Length: 249
Image (cartoon, rainbow, N blue to C red; front, side, top):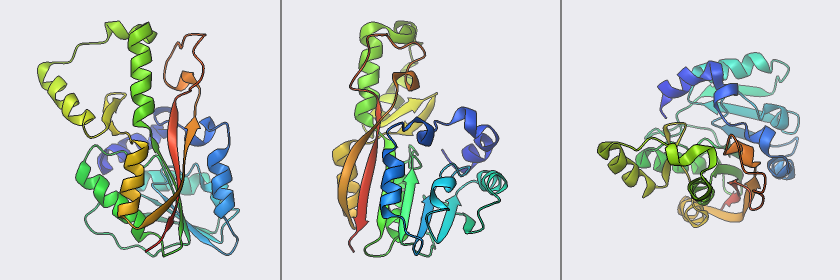
């Protein structure tokens, strides 16, 4: 998942990329943002994509920095929400070796740290720290590895969506997948995508100078995982991790 990927996906983002805002029916993420919001504060939307969270942020903060690696994503966001004159659009690569950014009071980062490159992920988590001053608050959402493995177990056990007929990978692909899963990288629509463990998130954020205040499941419907989920399939539902953290150094 590099800049070329996101530039290509931008025009069809709504149909290709999972909509966290729409699927968080509990409203937990919006509630967390509202809790840290203030008309006197600035906020940066890290990896804002086509700006789905701008209607949540712009009315509640003094200024919003909408930052993304894709120029096309930013153009779509700007054209979609011309009414928000307190939003500044900036193209940034948060996985780059060097990043220059003016810290904001608050930050959100919603399913943006997905790259299968460990080096780029390390850079991205360092960038989270650069985006905030001491005392700055972060709302982070990432895919859950526990949830992904749980879904795989269910699919294999009950042959959901004809899982037993899935194509057997070539030896080369199988070796690659085995190496990926050791990093928490598993395919989403054939794209290697990073998923995270609860404890891993605590460690990664602590190393970058954050106090982790809360890690919470954001539950989704089983239809987000399977085309035809069994009618009996209920809790626990598939989930992403939402993390609330504060910069402490």
